[in-house]
Image (cartoon, rainbow, N blue to C red):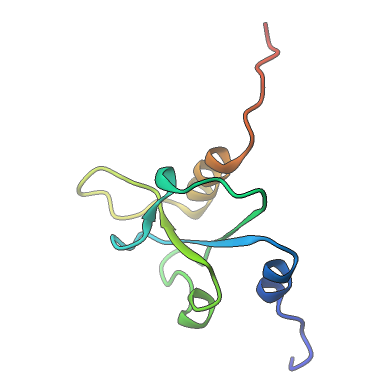
Length: 95
């Protein structure tokens, strides 16, 4: 659809820093990134990942460091790890 709005452009205009989750070894380590006030994690389908057009729109390529020999994570696991890393700390009130 030619009239579909560009959600990445809208988030960038709203002040979000766009981070593409990728296993590329040249990407920034998730744990070395400073934490901006607003961040949007962008993830692609398992296997093909993000398209070059999508990667061109993000501010940073970000990877989750893994042990040698592990090439990728399930997309749900990768997003859970990344969201835990960028979420503000929460006090444990479980006792």
